[in-house]
Length: 163
Picture (cartoon, rainbow, N blue to C red):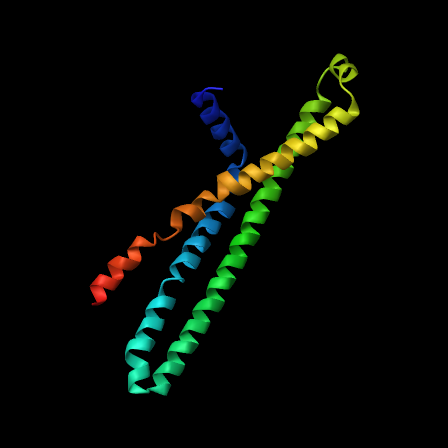
């Protein structure tokens, strides 16, 4: 297949999943929030080690620990909701595709059904939609998580600014 054919198939798939865009959008937002919530942890830890421990300020240390705890809980909650939205997107998109495939198979001619066995249909529909679900999970939806990952080289940038 040529690249234009792949792109046209992907565009057709996106049109098929148009009604499920809200799940992808909110999943991307929650993934971005979860990634952003990873940033304060190292900075608060550095602050606690460099400033709070030498001063032996236990009240500030307790505040920092409580803040880190709240950030972690909120990050876990965002990740959990993100996974639920991705699951809903995958299952609803696959269900819609399977229903359209079954409706198409019902409309095929009798001669076509005489040539193919029932096992062929059930195997192909089951395996192809399972493969598609894997593709959606890895390539179609997982890309926004990869795009939001923070590059480790940014750490050096922040360390130089704080010095």
